[in-house]
Image 1 (tube, rainbow, N blue to C red):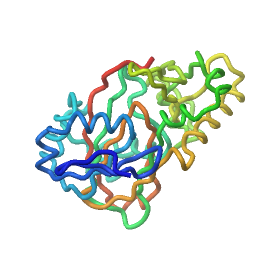
Image 2 (cartoon, rainbow, N blue to C red):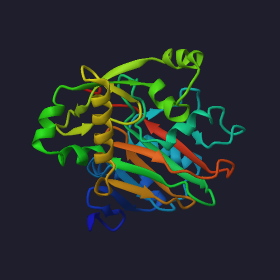
Image 3 (cartoon, rainbow, N blue to C red):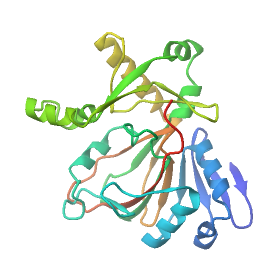
Image 4 (tube, rainbow, N blue to C red):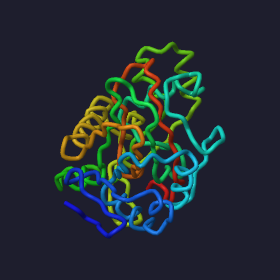
Length: 277
């Protein structure tokens, strides 16, 4: 179903609860004329795909600037190279955590608004990026579950994400992870728009005040619910694709692929615009 259309700009839903294909040429996108429509569509749909738009890095950066406040990388620069090639990315080992459902910036006062990812080199097999809409997942919960989640908070920590990669760390390694901090967040984000989304993912270690095993069970149940087929979309990359996702209302993960494949994507980000509350 086409939800927006004009002679120069249009979009088509990918699935009922998540994802839209955006139809526009480079000149139209770089003009910023439809930036407001793109931002509105992003909040509604969670994920926007610009198939084979083939932005170069300068165009990618310029397009990001049309959509909001540009977020530079922590290590400097405007483009982050998403690759497991340590020769291209000094933090490649850290990126292995991206194979698990997560959202970015849980420790920040305001998690980043959105990420824009462009495909440069494909892996021969695998390598899809998967997304799920945590707005839609929350809205589809039963009234009983919504009432149960009201006021509940979870502790998020980088240590929790690293346990997926190394479930039996040494104590020294554990202490190193713990130095990276933790943050207590609500399980439900009450957005300034009035909408609500689930705040889950592999950074969530436990729910405050619950029995540890029951707590873990709740987090697993919510993850399984949010990542059901009706709320999720798996993007099979083509070189030149650009995908934007709403980091405040989705989770994402990379699917496995040969680690030596040279798969390369370039990312930019928009700064956060509201605190997680």
